[in-house]
Image 1 (tube, rainbow, N blue to C red):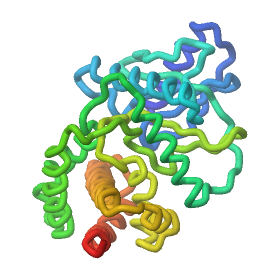
Image 2 (image 1 turned 120 degrees about the horizontal axis):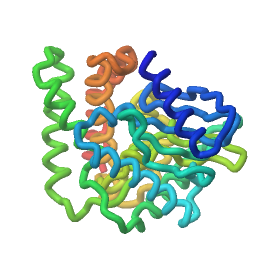
Image 3 (image 1 turned 90 degrees about the horizontal axis):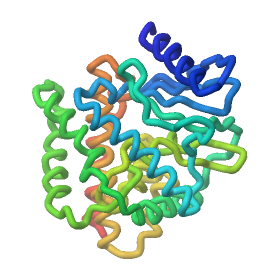
Image 4 (image 1 turned 180 degrees about the vertical axis):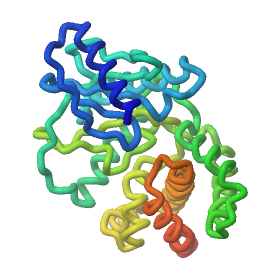
Length: 302
């Protein structure tokens, strides 16, 4: 894509102005934001192509600046995270209209996926550390995009979409009814946002940090695993079996229902606009209604 090539050139120019030489940019990912390794240097440029089209440049700057701050906070709490680089100014920097930040490059290594108990421990440690983040965070920030998707999908002819929109309205009302119960969360703590490194799994991508309901990060981690694997999916079963009171179980059930709604509506909206994987989004849509019904049954039976 010509736009990505242009960003590559601009990123290289900015990096060279900081004293880095002989840069060979390597695109690591372009499915969402553009991730570029400034080889041979251990630096990655994260170009916020998804949100840089926002008219409010201060809004975009604040998101990326907050992402850097959260990563440093989590490191201070002993959470393994991918860190901003200290070799050049980490940003945020506006390069030709695209905002970007600069992070350490970590060579991925083969690691066994975390077991259910390891995954839950990882997420719980992350959630505890996030609760101690004292700076301002957007209320329901990661959820607001779902609200935008719901508006765009309102006239969609598929009855499965309309059924999910009905659930969305109920969930949205409940989520907004108790703002004092919201807490700092990673916002998007799924398995693709942990990076396998020689030091173990590292949390990445703090763009969606928000004040969200209890168990949001745990629901984010297990949501699609359970959607595609069913309620017997091992990590999901481990979570349910180790929640020892009905109040917490209801809170987890609410969080995972909301997360499935967010992922399904958001991915479908994104794909229909030509920016995502329509096959994947359609499969989510096929599964979401029955899965949410199963969650409701589980919660009613406890």
